[in-house]
Image (cartoon, rainbow, N blue to C red; front, side, top):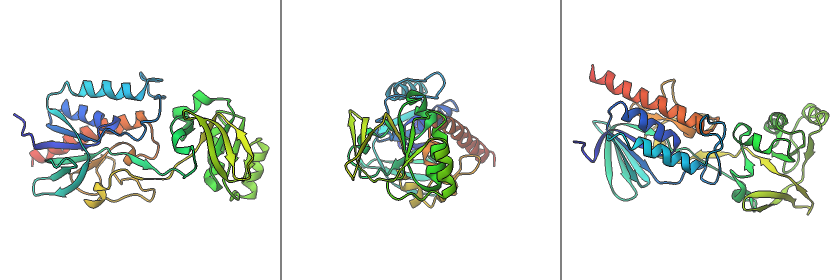
Length: 303
C-alpha cells in the first residue's frame, strides 16, 4: 500500500518531460507523485513537429495520450495544484501545494520549464508559438520560403538571420532600433539579400495569432507570414533556487551528466535546464532523469 503523502520521488511539472520521467520511474516500480498546475508554457502552440511518430500532432493530444499511458503504472499518482514551497528534511524533501496539501519524498525532479519574457508590443503575445516562433526545427518547415522576419540585433541577430536563411530567402532582419551589427556582419547579410530594418516595432497585426503585418512607430508597415524571436526567459518555478540549486549564466538549472542539480537529491529535466527547447528533447531528458533517479535510489539501498 502506498502512503498517500510519502513517495520515492515527487515530480514537479507534468508536461512532456515530467510525464516521460514518471513513465521511466513507474516502470522501475517507484512510488511517484506528479504535481502539475496544468499550464504548459507551449499551450498556445497548435502542433508539435520534429518529434518522430508525433509529427504534426496537436500538443494537447500528445499530453493526454502520454498521461493515459503513465496512469497504467499503479505506483504513479497525479495531483493537480501548484507547488508553492519546498523544504529539505532528514529523509528527503517536503513539498507544499497551493491547495494546502503537503507531500514528502526521497528525491525531487523539477520538470517545470521556463517562462518566456515577451516584449510589451500589442499582438506579440497573442502570436507567440503560432506565427511568432523561436525554433526553425520545430516550426520552420511550415513557413518555408515564406516572407519572414527575424527580430534580433547584434551577434544574435546576425547568427539568427544566417540560420533562418536556410528555410527562406525572403528574409529581413528587424533590429527594433539602431543596429548593433558590425560593418562586416552588415555587409555579409546584404550580400545574401537579407534586408536590415532599424525601425522600432509598434504593433503586430494578426488574425487569431497569425501575423499579417508588422507596424512600425513611424507608421510604415511590412507584411510577413512568420516572425522569429528568441525570447529571454526566467525559471517558471523558483523552488529549486530556494533549495539552493545553482543556475547557469543563461538562467538554466545547472545539472551534471546524470541530470543532478547542485543540491543532492534534486534532479532537473526538460526546458528548465535545456537551452535547445523542443518536445522531443524534453521527453528524452525526462526519460533519462527517471532512470538516473532510480539508479541513485538503488545505489543508496546497497550502502
